[in-house]
Image 1 (tube, rainbow, N blue to C red):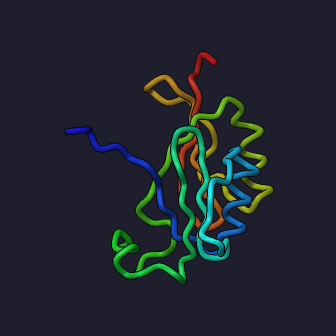
Image 2: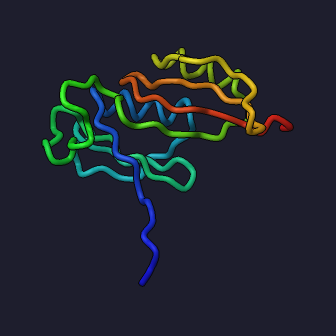
Length: 132
């Protein structure tokens, strides 16, 4: 039997176009496909992973079942992205409406990482090898 593999991360976002611009402009994601309505869905590729952006208002209860009841957008998902220039990335993220939640700092496991959030509040860490 083939081993299952993760094919995509699905994010329910406030504005698909704005979120797509954030992931393209800040992180270099590439648009893959939509279903003819980029206001409700757009798929991007970031490295080897697809990011599927769904409009939050179009989410069914089943699709959004991982959201805790009453939670704000962005709760429950964390991504990690490798980036060689954390200073530049921090600036791009802030200019695009994201936030730096924790400044870049050395970690005990040998990386330098910062924690950021996209405009919808989805948190992710960005890191690089401390010897790079």
